[in-house]
Image 1: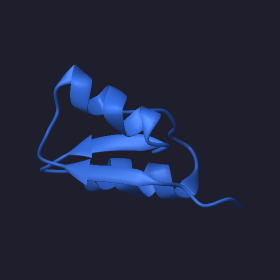
Image 2: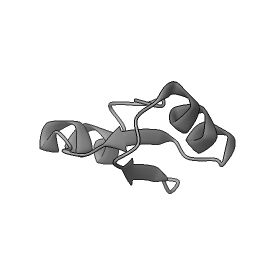
Image 3: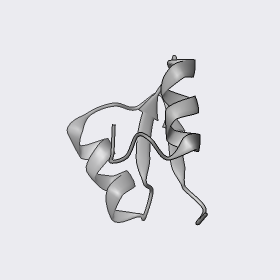
Image 4: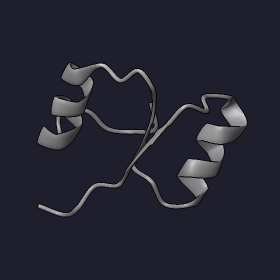
Amino acid sequence: MPSRLVALTGYGLDADRERSARAGFDAHLVKPVNPDLVVRLAAGTESGVC
């Protein structure tokens, strides 16, 4: 399974999410993070910039 890059940040504006996507991140999570979402991302059942 390929590696997944997830941005975990306190910044959640659309511009922040776009910047993460352009930098190559697979997902963008804003704190506080939903643990179930992290599990789904790790399992590969969730995708895209969140």
